[in-house]
Image (cartoon, rainbow over the protein chains, first blue to last red):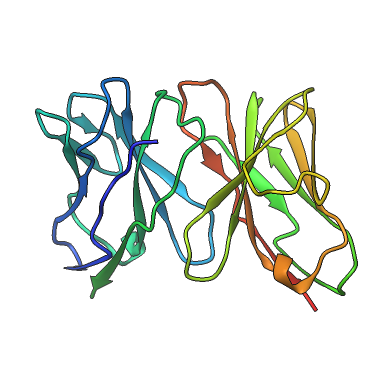
Length: 111
Length: 115
């Protein structure tokens, strides 16, 4: 499985945008980029995924670099409920079969 | 949205006991279910992949005779930790997918403590 690199932690202020980076320099042409997040004492939650084009949904936006070696998860207005560990994961299939979780980025949101 | 329910949410039992954890997809039929384990301050580790009606595929290093997985229907998978010991204490999480090109939907996890 191709590896991803994320900062261990990030901080943000409430109602400000948050940009969570992910490097995946060894990504293959068929790898999808997935983002999940895990709130304390809960199972992970799907956030967004994409292949080449930028993606938007009600939770976040995913900006994918043209060479696909990096991507950024964008939370447009952080809330306290967005405090979680965010995982950037590559998967060979669009359907997230066999996800390999790294350490992720712990996001702290300050009131 | 797709909902996955795990039961129980937490369990405390004595060493040597076998513990069964249920994972149900409440509003969709899950072609595949996954079982993960998460130790404190660590990330999730995939234990096994389970397809309805067939034997589970275990990840390297996971003892299949200790962690019994049954996926009897498209909405239910169970994980039984047999003869549990304190080192099996962990947060066990299941997930399910409807189709192969869909995201995984996770349960809220089961916190297992073996005394």
